[in-house]
Image 1 (cartoon, helix red, strand yellow):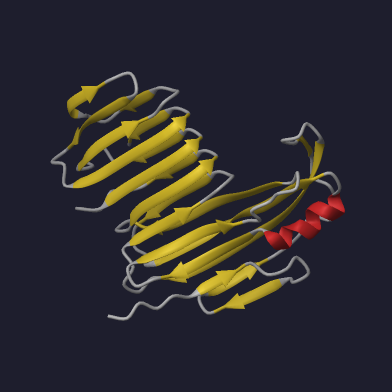
Image 2 (image 1 turned 90 degrees about the vertical axis):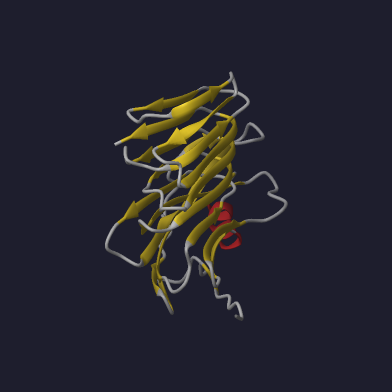
Length: 240
């Protein structure tokens, strides 16, 4: 079966709305500097921001894949829907507000509809020239969708149901991971890190194999799979 791919990129800051085949994205830019943070080079960064919102009606896709770079990613599953909503904020920090606002056009959220997965990814310049680029995501998905999130810098949080024989993969380089799952979850579980602590609360983990940097075991009958990994940050799993 031939794979079709559709890509959608956020429009320039001067546009007020962009209609796409799967929904509507409202774009706005804060007309004032909205804060100061110490930049990577020790300078005071002025920030410009731009919200985004997309909806995608799924066809045959069974996995959400997120490829983040800098920023927080939050994924929540809901029942009774076949729609994914993707919202959040693009943020650029620079030495001046005018440069930060202008540089927003170089920071994109791209959505690809593949035959078996929906891919959401951050695209930013390879050379930042002292600027800070961040994209914060809040994504809601159907409860029967598997989740695969990879991020470089930023917290990963998720409140999801693990589909039968489905997967939840949350991987970060620098950032904590918080996963909330139903207490009746059935999945093989593995978590690992370099610097931080791993905790599992309010849900029974059987056949535990634990070291100072890893934890493995089984939730329920082990039908699905959960994989959590970070280099720097804590991993916290909470049953509800």
